[in-house]
Image (cartoon, rainbow, N blue to C red; front, side):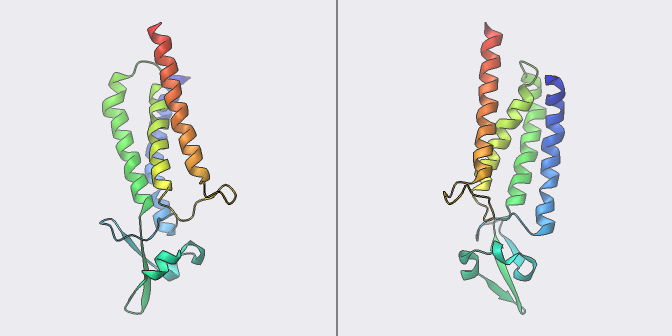
Length: 160
């Protein structure tokens, strides 16, 4: 069963890399205002009004009668993160795997870390009440911790 999870994990991470582009086409799940190298400009009328923050409004640009916000393309960050993770698993970890299930655990760690960091840039996150804590960040952290604990447990078991 663990071999199946290792194989399925490769398809899962590739699917997530491709699937994030749906956020681009839907003009959703983007980050806060930025003027960084990868900034993405979106027409205001193509974005849900509730997704526009005060900082975005302050930095809104008007070009040829159209208002634009400029944001972090978090879909791109996550898509690229997932592609790098896939390549690392295929070209580095596959050859060094010590036990069945290790690749899916590495996926959990890598995806969890990436999602935790990138989720912090988004403006449309689901929060736990009024705590300011993002649900997705908690879940991503749990995923990374689980993957790490699983690898430590299995490697200790192998050395005994």
